[in-house]
Image (cartoon, rainbow, N blue to C red; front, top):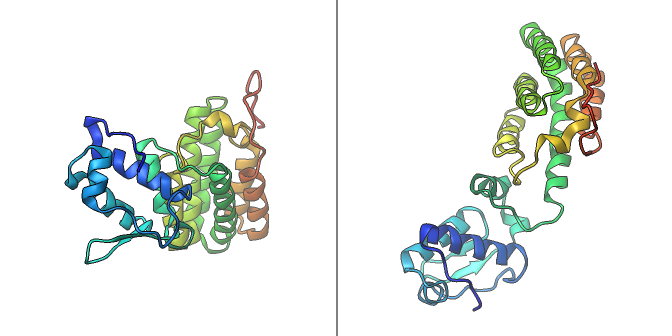
Length: 239
């Protein structure tokens, strides 16, 4: 086995990260058996406790299955893993070795946000609509400060998702906003077109407040699928 010896500061994280990447990248195939704890400990130059902890975390994420006899079998992560795999990476500043992951998570975000906006307009009460209108006005006042707008953007969407009344969407939203997009660092500058569309956020809030589900869904999709751009000089917001 060709592994890099672990640094002393975080041996379990090191073992976990290398094994995780090897599994996700396909260097360890589904149904393959990993080396035993003793062999892995020797390969990584760590104690068996660090290996055992790493394997436990891999099992929790749906990447391996540890049998009672001690054998560790690789699982197909596309079948067994969930959003918590990406979330675990964001917490450590690590990034899953999947080239399209940021794009994929943004696409999922757009799907959830679009339907949540429709449901919020159809199910939300007057208080939710009023809170969104206020939040959209406060949002506009922050332009063109992308960092503060990004924080306020999360507050707006939290109101939308909560107003949708869909618990699964709420849990997905929590995962998506944990550690930015739960896929590493996606800076506000990469979302300039979306964040600076103040008029779009106001239109979204107005559609929800007036109970227009179809209009809210259209506006949400327009915002959430805005082209990923680089900042433009002056950062002028669309009011």
